[in-house]
Length: 95
Image (cartoon, rainbow, N blue to C red; front, side, top):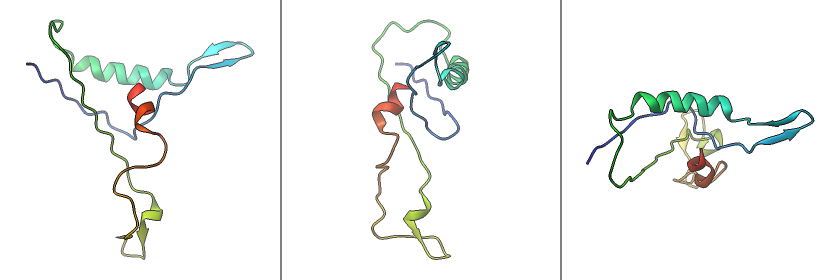
């Protein structure tokens, strides 16, 4: 079994839908997808894989200011442990 693991630096972002305007269609995520593809190509195996593929993803977000209290940046008791806002994991995985 071959393990391929790499880190994509930056804030996790969801795939944006294609937009249709007066001058045709365009993809607002095109630049981000191209940057991700260049990073992924650096970690590709030398030969194509001929076995089952399993993908595991982790998305890490910084906590918003509302999760902290006081000047000492103490974590509030009611701050959620997991990310519960937008973007959701389905849209993050699509990207």
